[in-house]
Amino acid sequence: MGTDDRGATGGTGDAGRAGGADGLRWDPRQYLKYADERGRPFADLVARVAAPAPAYVVDLGCGPGNLTATLADRWPDAHVEGIDSSPEMIDRAQNLAAESPGRLSFRLGDAHSWVPDRPVDVLVTNATLQWVPGHEALLPTWVGHLAPGGWLALQVPGNFDSPTHRILFDLAAEEPWATHLAGRVRQRAAAPGAEEYLALLAGAGCEVDAWETTYLHVLPGEDAVFEWIRGTGARPVLQALPDDVRPEFERAYKERLAAAYPRRDHGTVLPFRRVFAVAHRAAS
Image (tube, rainbow, N blue to C red):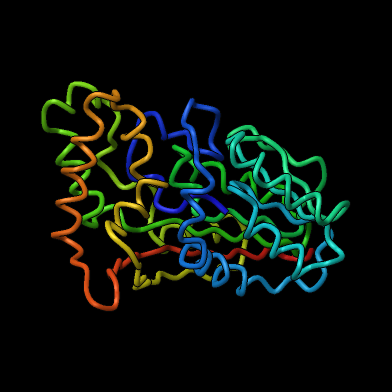
């Protein structure tokens, strides 16, 4: 599964949970605060995978494993393996593995060095690749890891230009925070668009379905957008700030987010663009 809009920020977070152990600490409880909203793109992605009876399914960047477990429900005869580079996330996921012994497992690992020990029937990577610099070059290799007739399904956030990120960039450039955040904020898109993924995967010999969707999440509670992004895209920045300046940064960030995403009677609306691609390798 992945941690959503993770890739917008962070030298510390560039490698990300699937990309490598980089010292970034993930909080499964914070991430799962909006589990239903974060899970919708995963469901939409996997719905386009038409594998009838896969034997081996991998979720690369599985996060706390709650969505990985749905793959085991869909394909009860498959072995489903979740891989993530966050010890905190894998610890949380192991509780789910205990409920489905032999069918569901989790382990630490990262995207750059991942090599399966057998051909993969379905490879899912959801909201993860934006944390993996140069991941475009990995895709043909991953297609090569698929079994004949196998599937690769990916989803990445496409919200790099949204106010959540522009405000974060602006604040990170202001003092007293800029001194602590030099080199920590990436001022470019963390992942390509649907057309680029389509071309990459088609070039690797796959039949490809690629699309983009903007979700309108209606979030309850105070500072809802801040609570959303503090568990994902803003995490590398917040963790890089010393304790004596972080509270003021958070206060300023909340204030500007509230102006950009006003709270209404029905909640706070967070538009969120996402990019999808599903690739099917030929059976022979």
